[in-house]
Amino acid sequence: MSGPEPVVRTVNLVKIYQTGGVPVTAVDGVDLRVDPGEFVAIMGPSGSGKSTLVHMLGGLDTRTSGEIWLDGKRVDTLSESAWAVLRRDKVGFVFQFFNLVANMTVADNVELPALLSGATPRQARERREYLLGALGLAERADASPAQLAGGEQQRVALARALANKPSLLLADEPTGNLDSRNTRDVLRLLGEVHRDGQTIIMVTHDARVASLADRVVSLLDGQIVDDGAIPRPVRRPRGGAGDVVELRS
Ligand SMILES: Nc1ncnc2c1ncn2[C@@H]1O[C@H](COP(=O)(O)OP(=O)(O)OP(=O)(O)O)[C@@H](O)[C@H]1O
Image 1 (cartoon, helix red, strand yellow):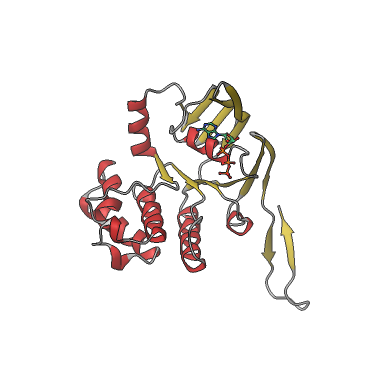
Image 2 (cartoon, rainbow, N blue to C red):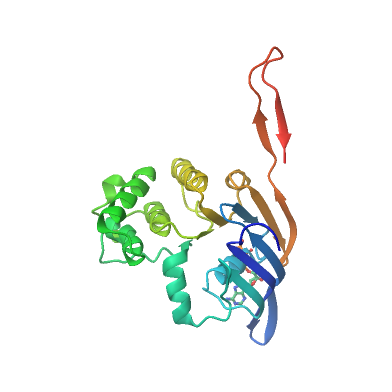
């Protein structure tokens, strides 16, 4: 294998659920490689295995067979407690269930992962101020999660997931419940942290959200059916012929 050590690599990854004795193959032999700094959108119709795949990448669901590697370390064989440490230090999540700590303020919820990963109180506070500010939540720092609207909780969960600059950000429909203004804030922040080198794997149904990514992996019936870079308009400097827009892939 050449190039940098991938952040994520799966080998023939399979997940079969048994429901009432009937096997359902949710993920069916996925080979995926994501390099440092890549922003990958996972797309596909409902039931194609997107959530199951990212849950397994974050250790929230076990695989039936195959391998999962994170930062060069095989992780599908880890115990639950080893996964807990790995998640704390390396993986940030934004899922539908926000799981903010109810009896802590928004600020403390966001600072906690950074502190647990060894940041100084000052570093944790500065990171929290940056993230909450970018998401339009600076005024809500002293609120408790129960005082927040659903969309606010969802944005706090994103701030928390990014607090310790994880090797990998996993996001499952991070803009799912947000209005257009909040969606814009979330996408702007994802773009910013991506430019800073953050590796991101994001499930989305929304082609506009996916257009922010470098690459779209499309699933169908648990298999990768397309995996490609997104063509982007390249704006050339103004010349005599005016703006020329071309596509590069
Ligand atoms: N806990 C579970 N038990 C049994 N079957 C499951 C479970 N979770 C998912 N499945 C099944 O696995 C398949 C893939 O589901 P998954 O949620 O990963 O798809 P998805 O692409 O994320 O769908 P959506 O876009 O609707 O969220 C579906 O057939 C689903 O019914």
